[in-house]
Length: 220
Length: 238
Image 1: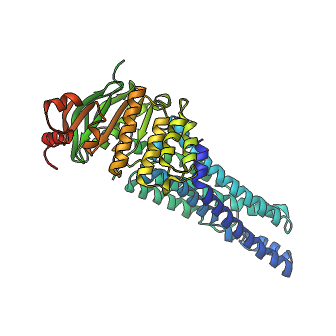
Image 2: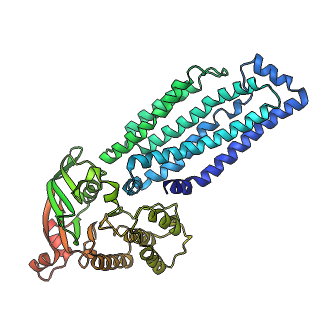
C-alpha cells in the first residue's frame, strides 16, 4: 500500500520524465541515424575510436534531472505541512517504510534508465560492433549512477528538518556530482565505479538520519 | 485498566525559551480530555511529544504503557491521529485515501467513513486538495473514526473551521466516542467548542498546568460562567 501512495503521488511526474527522456533519446539517435545515412557508419567508428566521445553526450545530465524531479515529487508532498507525521504514524515499521519509499524511487528510476540503455544498445549495435556499444553503455552507467545519487540526495535534503544540515548535504552532493562529471573521457570511471556505487548507496543512511532528527524535533 | 496516557515530569525548552517544566498528567480510559491553553503554551508541543515527533528535554510519556519514542506498529494501530489543520494526503481522492488507510487497520469501518462523506455530498472521485477546509476536516474525521482506534488524538481540530463545521465535528465526535467507549485527547484554542465535548480539562498557562479537573466539577466551582469565562479567569485576558 505504501507503493500505491507513491504511485498516486508520482505518476504524472513519471509520465513527464518518460516523455522527456524518450523525446531526447529519440532526438539523439535520429541525429546519429542521419549521420549514418549521409556519411556512413564509418564516421561513427572513427569518432568512437579516435575521439573522446560516446556519441550520446546529449543524454549525460538527463538521469540527474530525472532523479531530482522524481525525488522532489515523492518527498516534497511528504514534508509539506509536516505530512511526514502522518506517514510515520501508520501502523507499519518506520524503518521499512522509509526503505519502501526509497526502493520505489530507485526501482522506478532503474526501469527508466534500463529502458533507455536497452534502446541505445539495440540501435547502436546496428551500426557498430558490440565492444564499442559496451564502451558507450559503461560510460552511461556513471550517468545513471549520478541519477540515483541525485534522487537520494534530493530525498535526504527534503527529509532533513534543518536548513543548516540541508546546506551541508547539498554541498556534499555538489562535490559528488563534480566528481561524477569531471572526466568526459569514455570509461574514465571503470576502475572507480564499484567504490562510487557503494558511496552512493551508503547515502541512503542520510535519509534515516533526517527522519531520526525529525523525530527528535530538530528545527532551525 | 491503567491510564491510556501518562506523562511524568515533562520539561521542554525551545532554545532559551522554556515551554513548560515538570508537567504531569494522565488520561484515563473512556475519557474525553481537552488540553487548553493560549497560543504558545505548548499544546502542539505536547501532542508532538506524545506522538514521538519531539524528544522532551527531560521527563517521559507512555501511551498504552509503551514509551512514546518507540511505540510499536501494533500499538499505533490503536491510536488515531488528527494533525493540526486536518493535514491529509491531499493528492488523493476521497476513494483513494480510504483504500489506502483501510489496508493498515484490521478493524477498519468503511461505513463510518462513507457515512460522513455522504453527509458532505462529495463525489468519491473528488480530490482532497480541491475541497474546502471544512470538507477536509470531515474527511480527516471520517478517516480517524473508520480506524476504530481505542485512542483518538486531535491537535487543534477547530483550526480553520467555521462555527457550523466545528459544531458538526464536536457533535459527531462526542456521539462516537461515548457510544464506542473511546478515549480522546484533544487540544483546541477555541474554548467554547469544548464545553459540551470534554469530560475533563487540562488548562495550561506559560510554563505549567493550572488546572486538571473534571469539566463538570470545574464548571460547578464557577457558577454562571462558561468554560471560556473560566479559562480567561484562570489565565488572564489574551
